[in-house]
Length: 400
Length: 178
Image (cartoon, rainbow over all chains, first blue to last red; front, side):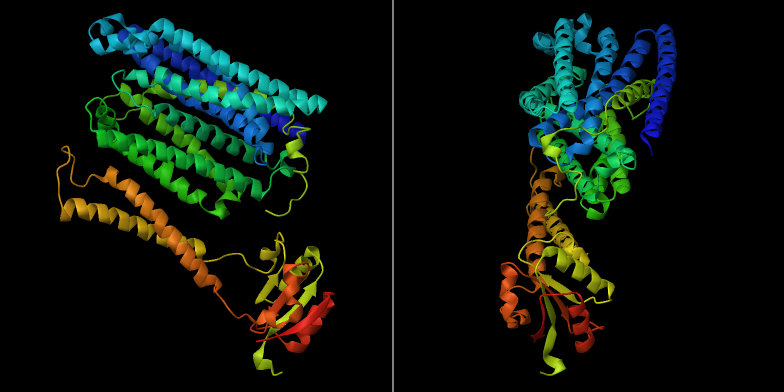
């Protein structure tokens, strides 16, 4: 494939993404507003619940891309060379997620019980938690999260581009130096945002491992998405020369690490709640894992852990890009099921259901996001230039 | 020296590239019982002598699986059959609590199976090996690269194999006594 054909493909995917985004978004708004006009509060609630669910899923990928990018700036390693521009493009799509957060702020009172004065007045526990769970604080924190994330994104991308243009070594040092505090800041932001945006849906419930869980969900989603995109590009110039079976083996090993961390943290939360057996903590699991949502939990255990785990243990999967990218796609899709299982039971108390509005919102936000991602990806050369860590990567290697 | 107690023929090379090339050509010539000895790891050599697959991962998996089953069974047996005790109203088969033990014994079983399986497969400890009957073989730990075609190979023929090895332009070809 020539660069021109590649560029055309990018444009096509970008335009299709925007098209689907507009179709999904339009259907979502039309049916959502009709539902709201017809059934009042319940209808508005359905609209914003669907929106929040779809938003949280699509937020995972760009946020995870930023984290993996900073991780690579800190650790180095050949695995990041073909992946870096994909991760950077993913991180740059966070500005869209910042804009798309505005509807969550608009629908705050419909989504969160702690934002409704009547609900707070009737609930002493919510009154106790008011110092954190209050509307001005929620808005202010969201603004801080996105400013901080977008600043990280802006500097890392600016220096990466400057390095391409000038070949100056100082930019590599700057990116590494920013990534160290950056990755810590990112972890705090994701922890705090997960408490604000998801855990507070059930404001009586709490878990201290929750932020970690979202951190690893996002990193796994970002990493898997980047590997999937890399495989799509791996037969085209210039990525073709920068990847080989050993690089995919490295990426597969990283996915395996994040996957095991996901399983460890997910299970740990259950184990601690199970051992503690406290009435504040168990409702979350008595509904999700030992109630009407059990089938979804079983699907997660099998398809989100055991199947990809055993596949990623095998070299003949990790060293064959097509097979590895199939596992990556599985994980990107199963992240959606995971987010669904964590988020939606907060309001869908009976059995697992998928609302039409959920689908419209997923397609709408997903299309807009994919279009933005592709638009960002085509802006820069697909391989970074002048990075001392990558000198000689295009040569055959010895000794590993 | 009779053919019966010949272990094989060994060729000595000066560089990793030469031994890799020789190993590739040996395999192309149809020899399968081939071994290589080098002072440093040579990338691609394992593939070139046809060392693609070992049973070790399977052994590790079986060991880990059995260990995991044992761990879960132990917890289940102790808490459900041997000494049933109501703890905080939880069911007797309180399986989330068994998972850490199950996990630990999976690792233990896998690790033991790996070490024992590795020793069983590579035949260590091995106090006698015929290749040491070649005096120059000691150089394989410093700066020489050796390729050995074993007499067990079905294509092995002392005369023809020797000619073949000499065509690879080695530093020397040695007969290895068993």
